[in-house]
Length: 222
Image (cartoon, rainbow, N blue to C red; front, side):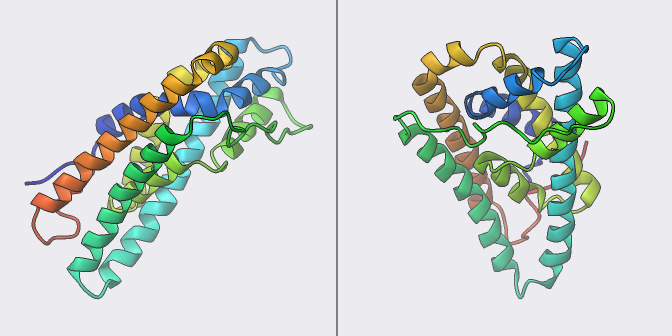
């Protein structure tokens, strides 16, 4: 049995977890619109999210590059399987914590993002989006753990970038829907947590039923 981690699969994972992204970073999305100058809101959102997705792809490339260097140097195949299992369990843990968090808490990125004062507005917005990708996010870290098993930097970039694209539609809309989303915070947080747990459970089952090859269940391609 081989479970292929493909760009469409990561795109769907992004869509499934986008409520989490909208809740945690909807305020950042709204803040970026305040720096758009003469650009339309849609144009500004396009540029910022292009920067954010590019940042995800860059992080995916770095994770995959590190993984491709580390995995051949592991002392045995069992270590690779334990690392895979750790990535899967991390997704389940993040989902469980997301479902438990009932009380209102400050978002991971509730503070205004770093703004650039110089340069053309589109360039500044792109750089702000690029830095947005570096903000702490447990879901993204789980995705990067998976991308680290993809084999090459290009494949890691493809997978993490596809995940970023999946999170974009709801995150794009969240800037204008911060108040509405806030009133539905608990339900959306629980839905996002459940989606993460299901993804992690599917990964865990795939690891359990596959053979000893530490990369056999994780074949990445377009």
